[in-house]
Image (cartoon, rainbow, N blue to C red; front, side, top):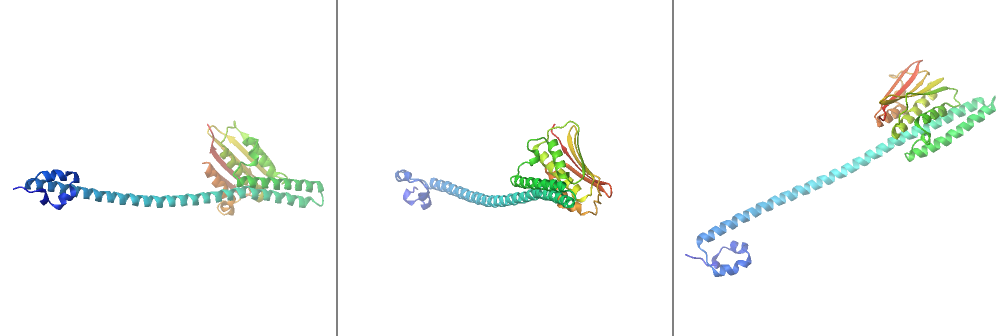
Length: 287
């Protein structure tokens, strides 16, 4: 028995390309041939539907990934921005403390010295006032440099040893405190950021000795060893108990510790009542 193509299943007619219409019109098929073709077409349709589902699942997965990635990116951008703001706030806090605060402290000490010498020594008073004005101008310049994250003025046009020595003499001038600066070993070149942080740490330690320790002598020593450099600031002042003093929680000490961490250095402070204070920073030097 033979079937003409007019009796083929509607699904077969729909799935077979139109270009085969003439062929179907000119030929007839057996039941077995029709059943085989129909089975093959059904299997192909099933495969296409399965592939369609797979593509839909993959598309859904990709969209979910894109959404999660976008959310993660936004969160990361926000976190990075908050971290940058926090870091900048800390930097500005350190710089303001280590420039303006120290400059105003020095100015105050000079003006107090001028006030005490006014009745008996006009020239000394005038000298102290001149130094105070100079320190005020210097502090203002340093504050402006801090805002733009520039190198400290001490380091412009001179090496680190000279800058450290000038820093010491500038802070203790007109305070009546004896100062000593020395370099031990053969100086090596330190990275610029290390010089900046060490200078700021030295400024803080020297200012603390002048302001709080009732010192009569301050020594700053810069030592160069084969693989490291060491900064020592030592005074013979009243000292304090580290476990009880507010100095261990003060911003000055926190600032020194943060600066030390920025350059991967080691920080230590030792103090005893009546025996003064030592601040030591050790950092790896360039080979």
